[in-house]
Image (cartoon, rainbow, N blue to C red; front, side):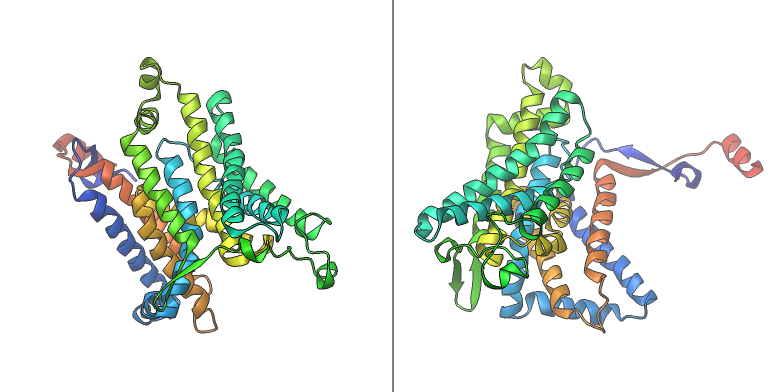
Length: 377
């Protein structure tokens, strides 16, 4: 759309108001809710009633909040995955596949250690295995982007499908180490349950149950913020992301920074996969992981948080609440695709809001000759 025809133009902002980091995400979120309300009205639904039910099932009951924290845990990790990569202009769309690989390596580590391993040994090694698995998987598009100028959007997206195929093969199409081959597992393929000592703990705060994975994700988010804001490597990330040519003149190596950030990004998603197995599923479940779509939802989380790792914590809980409400309200009287539509609208409105962060709308003074020409046309 040419705004000049309507007497307006986009001008780059010379300075950013302090409030914009808060007002743009909040405004984008409410704009998405307004757009969703219009769609609900078109389909004959009552927006106020629908949104009230979502809030009630997400945040207004202890059991609802517990379910929200469960749904928020993997979203926290995949949100961090997207946030840290997008910060330097490395568009890692492969969080979904890196999540799968983390689930594979994390569960594999727990199964390899067996029932004799104590929890204080098994759980840290699961965390390490999930992070390493995701990091290696993400480093592939990182290396291709840094040294072969390959588009990381395409390569990371393609690797999602490869990771999904690997997970399905391990459980449904082979007699792998991950598959339960005893009892009903011979006829109905399923993953082996990891040893009980490898189950990740849940901490109770009264009636509230907080998963260990959520606490781990919050700690990692704070570490990422410190890494980006208070370290030399974080400074290199900002320079490479904003001006790679300047980074080369300053003696930095953009290729190495890109690969390192890609690996960190993948490690975040891999941790999410390990947390999904350790805290909730307790076995490699390819179909369940694919149906969840945590990797793609993490992009929405990162965008709404404006790539701030600490803000990702709160946005993950918000989107987790919407997701949890969608699961609990699913039925004949609740639109089946509403949650997915809302997440898509949030992403769309957030990206639109980013335009208002970078540019401001200014009025164009049109000359009489130009106006006459337009009227004549």
